[in-house]
Image (cartoon, rainbow, N blue to C red; front, side, top):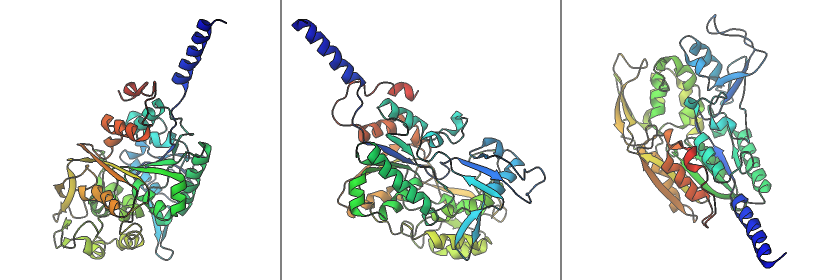
Length: 418
C-alpha cells in the first residue's frame, strides 16, 4: 500500500470513529413529580361505590393515567380505586380495600416518558427531554434511567422506593464505567430527591453523584394543595367536577406534604378567606377541623418536617424553573363555594402551580454547601410545559454534554422537538 492509500485508509477510519463514537456522558436518572408515574391496578373488591364499577379483574389494568376513567360516572370508580386509607395508629396509608397497585417500569424510561401506555400526545411527560437526550448520545435504560414511584405518598412512606433509587444510582454508576450520575427531577420529584440526598453520607454523594438538576422544584410547598384539600382540583379536565375527585386527592399524604411551608409563608399571611374566618400557615389544625378532615392534619404532622427546614443536598445543583405565570396565591370562598366548588383565586407569581417563593427555595442551598448552585429562570414556562420547552431542553444540553466540541452531537435535535 502506498503512502496515499495509507493516508486515505487512515482518514476513513478516523472519520468513521469520530462520527460514530458517542460523547463521554454522565448517566442520568429521571425522578418524576406528583402524577408523573403510571399506575396499574388489579381488583378483588367485595363492594363498590356504584353498581357499574367493576369489582374483580384477573389482570392489571391502567389506572393512572387512564383518560377513559375520568369521564362522568366512571370517575367515581377511579376515585375509589385510586384513594388511600390512613391508619391513625401506624400513621401510614394503604390502598383502598381490594385494590392491588403496581408502579411499572422502574429503571426504564417508558413509563415516565408518557403517562398512558398508548403514548398519546396528551399524556406526554419526559418524552421530549428523553428524545432530545437520545439524539445527544444517551441510550435508554443504560445511560438514561427512570425512577417512577407512588406519588400519592411522601418520603416517610417511600422507604422501599428510596432504597431502590439508591441501588439504581449505584447500578447506573457501575454500569457506565464508574461515571458519576446526574439526578434530574421534576416538581415533587425534587424534594423527594433532596430527602434521599439529605440521608446519604458525604462520601456516598461524592462517589456517585455528579449533579442534581431541578425542574420546577417545590422547595417550600405551594398554595394550590390547600384548595385541593378544601374543594378538590379538576386537573384542568372541564368535564370533571373538582368535588368529585376530592376524596382521592385528600387521601394522599403527598398533598399534605406539599402545602405551604411555614419557612416560606409568614404566620400572618392569609392563604384562605372563608365565610367565618381566615387561615394562615399557623391555622392548619383549625382548617382541617373546620373542613371535617382531621386526618389531613395528621398527615401534615407526619410530613411537614421531612425537609423542613431545608438542608442543602451537598451536591452541585442546577435549578431551572418558570416565572411570570399566573399562579394561585390566596383562595376566597363564599358560603356557596366553601367546601363545594372552586373559590375565587387571588393570583401570585410562579409557574402556574408552584409559587415563586417556593421555586426560589433552591437558592438557600448556596449558603449551606461548598458545591455550586446554578439558577436560571424561563419566562412563561408553565409547570408542566417546562418539560417541552426548547429553551429549557437547550439548557439541559449545555449542562449535560461535555464542553469539548463533538462532531454530530446535535444530530436530530431540532427534529425531535418539532
